[in-house]
Image (tube, rainbow, N blue to C red):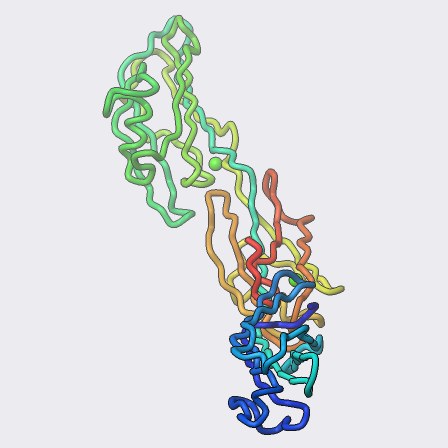
Length: 341
Ligand SMILES: [Ca+2]
Ligand SMILES: [Ca+2]
């Protein structure tokens, strides 16, 4: 059916000799030769090429078996389609019946989604002392999340030989999760290995949970209670949490947008698209971010310029930063309102 947008139907009927007047009534004088109108027509879109028409047979056939119906349709979009059903009998005049279908203007909706691979933040804490020293006592650390809108917090005391996990308020994992800017569940895992057995030095490897994002490196708060000659604590970032960053572009119908920030607001996304010669107007909504700062933008093509079935946007991710960074476009509903996902 191409662009036939068939969402409602109407049946009218007339005879070849009484075309103007027989929408609802049967002419009693013709009842013996003219069948009633078919009734209850329904139209169903089966696919982009197929339209299904159902109707009920006439209540009376005028005394002769109905041999056929004739169905016509019109592909002209944007206007009402006029379709005709013609019933014939062996004798007498043909009855011509009309079905009018109307299209509801359904705007195409496409989804733009950015994603990246989940790679968690991993940091280490290492204690050490001079040769011949013997580590003992405790130390504490700080985490400054203020650059991402959080707070600066200092941990409770961490034993020089703190277990990796378990032991509430004693293990490394539990002491760190007791910090309010990390919180319960904020540490994915901690492992501990003996670094220098002779001095009692340990290496804790701390994996942060993804929702914390790219965590600043832990710092020493206080090592004054850490004993042992030359006792010290070192911090290192093994890898930062994977985060989307920078920009991407969208191509549509022969034109490509300027750079779109990875976290573009709905207004910025709409402006980038509406600046294209191939786009007149769009409505944009946004959800996210996910743990890698990925977002989902839904773009609805609202103008007549982009009426009907429009091209799917194509992402250009050359400048989108982040391990496994990608942008994908899918069509949610096309011009006749078919759901795709
Ligand atoms: Ca980091
Ligand atoms: Ca489309």
